[in-house]
Amino acid sequence: MFKATTSPQDPMILQFVPILTQACEILREEYQRYCSGEAFDIERKSDDSPVTQADYRVNTYLTEALAKISDLPLLSEEGRENDRQHWQKFWLLDPLDGTKEFLHKRPEFTINLSLVEGSQTTFAILAIPAQKLIYFCPLQGMPLKYDYQQQQWSSYETIEKDQVYVGLSQSSQKKPKYQQYLDALEKITPYQEFKAGSAYKFCMMLEDQVDIYPRFHPTCEWDTSAGQCMIERIGGGLVDFKGRPFTYNQRESVLNGGFIAFKNLQMKKIALQALAEMHVEH
Image (cartoon, rainbow, N blue to C red; front, top):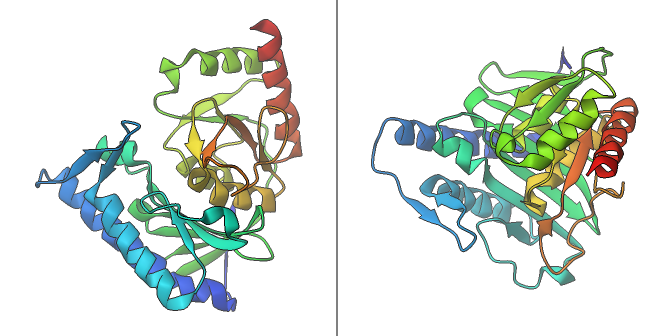
């Protein structure tokens, strides 16, 4: 959960507040335009996933904004990869995570921005434009939340609760592995489901609405980097099915395998126990 606090003095965070606020407002404007039925450009990528004028507009804005404050290279979902294997430090961006949610008129989409150094994420931002909220994971310390409409800062604080919430994608019921996992989990603990868009679930982990987030279908590095940084900072994590944390920019492809994300060590034990049980049964 988050508790109200004073404005941070971290110059890196303060530098990004106006940039991300403007990026959120661009996305809000595009979302309103789409929902109102105005003409709206939607294309299909080579993998058949959708990309819209909103993705491109936010990408252009953030690419230009980053270039003004940093000389580091940028790897974006809507950009080119170039010679990223030689980068030791770079920005990683998904200008609109949850394009499918956007197109289904569900306001569960985010902006994901992170700083990768070596193979690790050291600084991260997740923004929820529809709620006018921006989450920051500083280079050191716990995540912060900024409500830019109220101009209110909050800092993360751990709370204990009994109920287990499992974060799932809206389309998870169509994929049998999710039901297999839930069946295995049910043998270990009662749980409730929380269905929402991709990186939005990482934000809900910070808000105590998701404890375990299993993912059996593909993501890319820009989908997970910021969220992993946030939940690792609060004592949780994101690991592959062999229990290894994701690393970044270490492979030829930016495509991730499946993962299990968990909010704390207790949830890690439950989440991985359910995964092991699932593999035994299937």
